[in-house]
Length: 449
Image 1: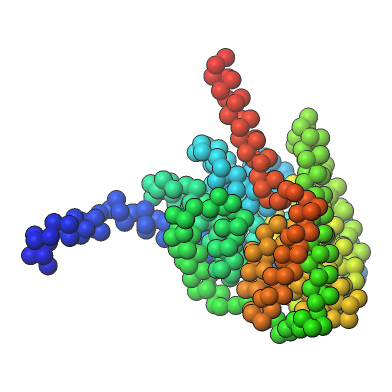
Image 2 (image 1 turned 180 degrees about the horizontal axis):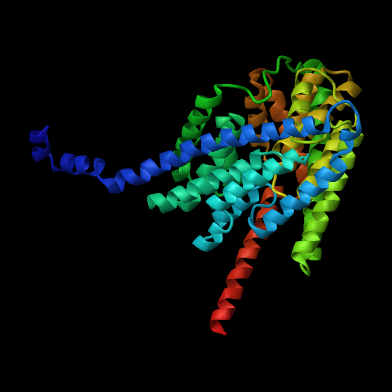
């Protein structure tokens, strides 16, 4: 080998490169960051599930006086989360996906650090878990994206890597993949939702991060499908009216969710400008009380992520006819309240409830209807049809329905575009970009003064 190295100088340089610390350190740090995303995603999922179980243990199921505890517990929890987010973890409010999108567009390291940091990641996890313990209609998947992006950006700082935008994208994709055990959906999400200006040179980063985070998650939880395995299959000869209804009506309701969330959020931001903290706490308290009232009137079904209700519908048990409307309202209120928490799982629950109701009306299978409703509604909310049908396909493990899910997702997306021209996450990300620009200009004005 030594003789070959003397004979071929290029081989000698290649050997030196491979044993160079400068070459291996960034790789090792990147791999460690991707694995940590998988491990922390599993921890986050476990804490979130236990928080929901504990909430239902506290309120009981016998209809006694404890069932009315959310009238105090939920608004108090919302106020606590809003206060902690405003005072100690600014930038942690809401889903977390808009923050990750905004960070990819910001070039200043300090601006990125205000949206993606280890401190924010810890706060995001803690406050989302508290919100679920108090009955908020939120999910952990969006927050996992912000956590994954923050971990990967920190890895970039430690490893001396310069591809910050690509690493944020990779961390976001790894977060989705580990949160749902859906590696393909993580990649599609990175391309379609996170990186509208996707660059081919980030392919390796995204794939590697998704693989390593997925392996870490699989090592702890094993291979599983998020909603179990859907056994029913769409028969286009008889189910095409259901596909059309779930796609068009689901997309319309999804667009309505986006419109309401954006308009109410903007109005609240303007109203909060004079007294940001106290008015933010008042909004959180009112929203929390409304979520509690809806939860009690629905028999407790709208509290939490809605994962159980969606799974029950997919397995063929019809949900109450107006569950989707109640969950829709609880989701809007939880989102505009200003507490940390995502909309992925609650949106899938709304879609499953809507599909279940449409299935009852059209005399179709509840399991099929729930799947199609999820695809149509979710595509309408996020206006990302590929992500919608891929993520539902992977979460249910039935590839026989791929064409039907694609049709429902595309119909939902098309309907949503007619009603709302702003994709929800990207519209919200512009708020964080505007805040960063405003801070930058104020700092420059102070320097000149």
